[in-house]
Length: 483
Image (tube, rainbow, N blue to C red):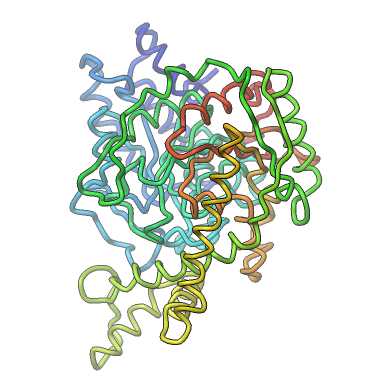
């Protein structure tokens, strides 16, 4: 078995036993990137030279942290000092951040090694990573299919063993859905648990940084690194810092699991529904109590999400005006033309669509009818989750209504693309944590994801629930992409 096949906790064990070195690991992943990137297109920027330099610096040093010398990939909307942060957009094609995001500072403090910046849908707006301005990322399980999005580069790179783990961001499912499509583990933490300082904003009240990993233990390990109150982020919540590995292996006996019946009905592929229900049955064998329940919010959540997300995108992307930083057109004779032409030439179609939608719902005469009403529905959705969490410890649903679809299949139908977020957006609206873990494959050997939803700041229960199923079924040992 090659080093790049191992999970992070397996690599750490070998490092501690001095069976391998930091340089061995880094070289293994760089070699893998050299061989596979041309097939997958997971990276916007590869920092192999910098990675080797750092590995050489660390090789003779004493491990100062748990993740000392472990490589990582970083989604390209997370600022990295001295390395381009493009958001996969022509608007920021040559932008080099003058500072590190808080999560990048934490990674650097661990002496982890960045292998590069991962491809994504432009400004995180999309569900397939087909909306990148630079390249289309492909799914390692079938390179004719999408990896999901917007964190498709991160998920594809983890699935293809080009990075051992990666950072993504999740606004409406952008960590969990690509994790489902690529057969890896994707965790969206509670809103406010991980600092958003240095994350290029799409929708500020919904965005959350989180890990994409090969297994659940790695997810808990990386979450330990990422959490902590940050004074630079006004939405960061000051809660007690936990060790998410401490209770990971406690099991699920006595756990109460709710299964919302509405998430298994119309719009959900039958193979996915069956696979997730079979997975839920495994929890009964493990000693958990499972009950069907009702959570009739899917349609309202999707509409609410796109109103709020587009409104906030319209506001956040106003800063890209061709003057302060980013792309500037050469074709202008006055200030208005400079604004208009810079934005028209540099933003892609999906970004323009969402800016226009957001500007519309915020405009005079429509604000109350759309944006204000959406915020009221947001409160209703939160309350419905709170009602269920007074009875259950976790909820389980499919992660996505379909498996990964063919590249180009839905590009010309944005409404159909938006339905890919059917099962995931409600968590962002309510600020809840959720994790997607693989629970099987369909008849075309494409991965199926199961979503576990937890209470606010109860990632411990979420992770131990995911871990118990993962250990019983051993997905990574049974199924692997052909690549």
